[in-house]
Amino acid sequence: MRSARKREHIENYLKTSFQGDTLFGDVFLEHNALPDLNFNDIDTSVEFLGRKISYPILINAMTGGSSLTQEINHDLSMLAKEFNIPMAVGSQTIALEDDEDAIESFKITRGIIGDKGVVISNLSGQATVEEAQKAIDMINGDAIQIHLNPAQELVMEEGDREFKGIIDNIAAIVKNVDKPVIVKEVGFGISQDVAGRLYDIGVRNIDISGYGGTNFIEIENLRNHTYDFTELYNWGIPTAASLINCRKLPKDLNLISSGGIRNSNDIVKSLVLGGQIIGISGELLSYLVHGGYSYAKQYLDSLIYKVKILMILLGKKNIDELRSTKYRITGRLKDLV
Ligand SMILES: Cc1cc2nc3c(=O)[nH]c(=O)nc-3n(C[C@H](O)[C@H](O)[C@H](O)COP(=O)(O)O)c2cc1C
Image 1 (spheres, rainbow, N blue to C red):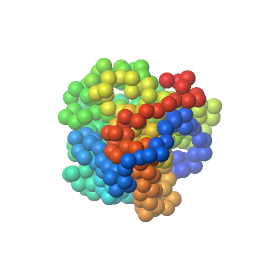
Image 2 (image 1 turned 90 degrees about the vertical axis):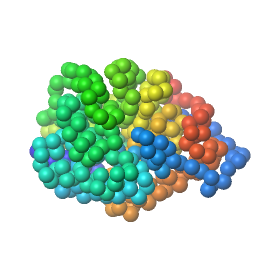
Image 3 (image 1 turned 45 degrees about the vertical axis):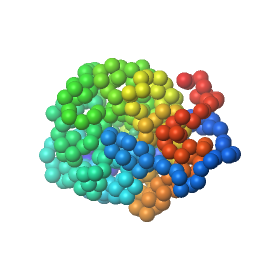
């Protein structure tokens, strides 16, 4: 059942057509006509979870649990290894019941990336402390993502309807597992209020995963034959708004900017607005499924090349300098932050 659902998520993601808006277009960065820099001086490396990674890009949680998803995880892991960037596996719930094939589809990621790379576990907010520790141990995770997905569950016919107590659950996981916990959405964004409540229970890493990219209301609507949820396709907090509002919390809260990150502009703006790194899921999956490994690699190569170009055009030689870039907010985004 779960394994069929994972396959449908990928197939339905590729069928989605609704285009949301992250509102990164409302962020204005000023062009610098006199950058005192050479292209080869640009340094895109950053620290993430105590390791040096070459680019501030996370291959974000997608899949695992079956042979099709193992193939996808294999290729995503090869990309993570090749670019020296971190990767989060998809929800490991399916592998908690000791099904060796399912476990292997996740373990493959650590096997390919090796001990020096960053691999992140993933479970839902309903997980117990024991399950969270088991998911970490399964792949020697450097951290665990705990996903919050009420919108997705509610549109899924067989989804959860009980959300009481999740915050206490997360508090217990944060307190008891031996690796950092990253709480994430799946494309509807984290508000400042929710980020504050998570901060208060000790969460120091949030992946905002906002609105404007992968749309799980649409993905699940394509599987739900009882109700039509088209009117909810525009539900969610645009990624740029979620990021700016969560950034109002103390500096020791690390924010990952994800949800609709597709191009170099989105990446640079995310870092300027206070994202520690960015996460990409859907767009990379599209390149991989449509054109195979080399197409996905080419996409990442061109993304990185254009990020470097933008860094020159802002006169910033490394990511720390880039973070100090002044920006202006225009349009609808101005009303939301
Ligand atoms: C096919 C697919 C499967 C996903 N599965 C998971 C998952 O198992 N766990 C999770 O936390 N997020 C999952 N996500 C959500 C992503 O991690 C991310 O939060 C979301 O897609 C928004 O980013 P994007 O617009 O770059 O795709 C999935 C996304 C896609 C496209």
